[in-house]
Length: 122
Length: 168
Image (cartoon, rainbow over all chains, first blue to last red; front, side, top):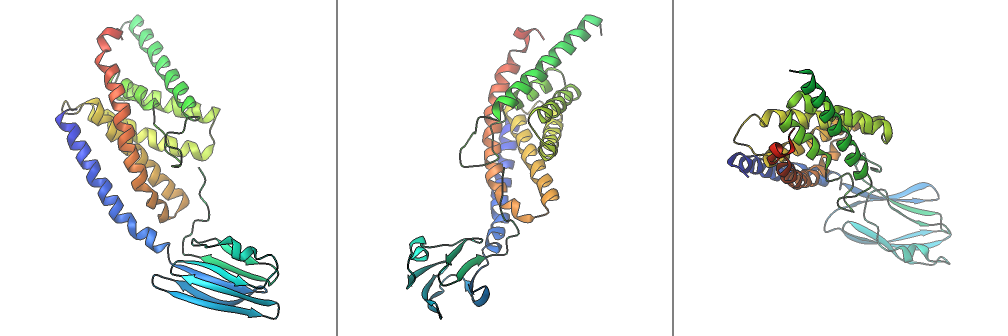
């Protein structure tokens, strides 16, 4: 390693720190998440998933009920009177594109975000 | 330049190209860090960097372009060609420039080349995908590029120091 090499290395480290600092807001922007509750294909309600937002909602229809628990940036179904309880067993979902489905009650809860990337493959 | 020298140079450059090609092909099957997609060690950069020091910018550029072209014909597709080509050209360009300054050793030159390689690819994918969100992966790639550039630079330095013994 010569003098110039340390110069290159320090420039790259500065550049790395800068890139970490500058690309951080991009992740925040893609975190602008909302949960969309659809009953029988129609939008029932929309909740914004932000920090310090906690809520328990009962989603009722003539087919039965589901209890949705929103815990900051993740959500789950805590209870339901459907037969298989697959939605309860699924647990928390937290990122854009994920969904919880309760087929017997025709209920679909999806998380949507502002990210314009659906999937990345290499 | 005598005819024998020309033939020698031609042969050596062909060998360099083939070595770069074989290493590049073998590397496709070796993931450097499992879990971090798109990152590889870039061992064929050793060959390109050695070519820069042994022959010069023009010759190394030829080796790099041939390597990318042939590798694409064998394994790649259209989009992988654009990324590899942009990365290779800019890496060779910066290495060819920095090599002329005596204050840089092959290690530093390799790191700079590695950095330019990933940056060119990043800009390329930004222009193709037109999404600024791919830049959120840039710090990871940049960090790895400095490390891989350092490793390949050290290996290349070992070869370059033995230039007289190699008689080429």
